[in-house]
Length: 409
Image (cartoon, rainbow, N blue to C red):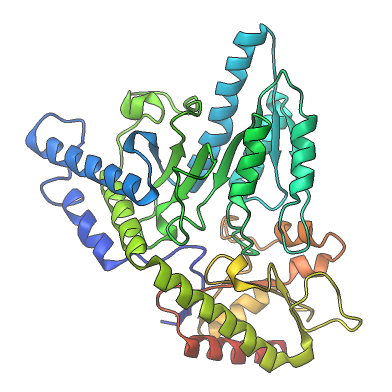
């Protein structure tokens, strides 16, 4: 087994999570939670407890949570489902067709960008992308301008992720939420990369919808959630069938997955601050190790390009406190395809990625880095993402830097 540095793609399931799930997979609580016999009742009770646990961890109430199959479904439900609900409400008020305004950023995950394009091209929603700086941080003044210019007689939906899955940049949720409230916009955030890793008090943040996924926090794959603020319009369903979850997401609920999600989130809550501090220390350790290894060839400054092209650049904020804990994203200047770099690192015993793992194994120029640096295509095409987790040590990072430099040399 090599050194795994791809925790943003997925995490290994924690042993405690598997233990909590086992009765709902193979033992006396595996039944359908809608069944009336005792095994079904036990499954139903496990589901209720899981929902309570997740709600407590996020400081919300159980009825605000919709279970899904993962982050992609949650994001699609937030965009398509909420857009339909808002448009229908405005049609009733205005007695006319009222396609809305959707505001997002060019660095969102494809599970937001793809539905956004469909809403624009097939449903007539006006689609706007907020401007970014060279660290991937959104321009709040531009967001305010887009909100102020949106038509008054149509709905407004804003979808901006909390932490970028590639560059690691953390967006200011509180400031975005305040702007959205001021301009009567509904605010959805994709928190797949940050849920459990950073404090999220849903009772205080001015967010209307939040997406999360279990397999990013040492829970099982195939389970996610969409949180809906108690006062926000509920999304229209994308699927139709039974009346599970009030008809918002019909189909037999993945009870074992829900239990695993709750257990994973509980574990994170118990160790969150200590683990965040440890990962941030490791992030800084890696940056220092890269600086020592590459010297002047390592560029930490996002706002300027050196006269002589450096060997590697850091993408995203240089301050690790402004990044997702454990995330470091690099570009390199050597004419070496990302596929070749990843394969050579794999042969050396390091499991990393170039960015999002959601493109069926294809490695394409990063749309995130391309949006941050539109005039530097090579920077977007030649990238490597190192994402640390509970198993990562400083020795792992020392070994990675040595292998990385040898390959580039």
